[in-house]
Amino acid sequence: MIPLDEQLARSCGELCGATNTSDIVDASMAILAGERKDAIVTSDLSDLRRLDPAARSSLYRFRWGIARSKSLRRATLHPPLH
Image (cartoon, rainbow, N blue to C red):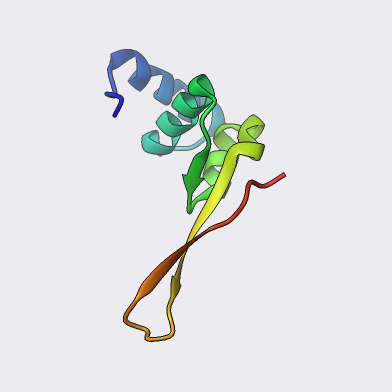
């Protein structure tokens, strides 16, 4: 876990301002993943693409689905988008 310190919070605010977005959690993920060269697993691809268009090859779509029993939920991880 990486703390959201003052420097990272300011970077998130600047990124949100530059991309006309408002989700600092998405912004922090984009910044930290970019610095660490990590992949991002998200259900919100459009916001993350907007925050970091260069991360396209490291974005994975996480999607919830309903299993046959309708009482179980299952997650599907889709491959990177190119």
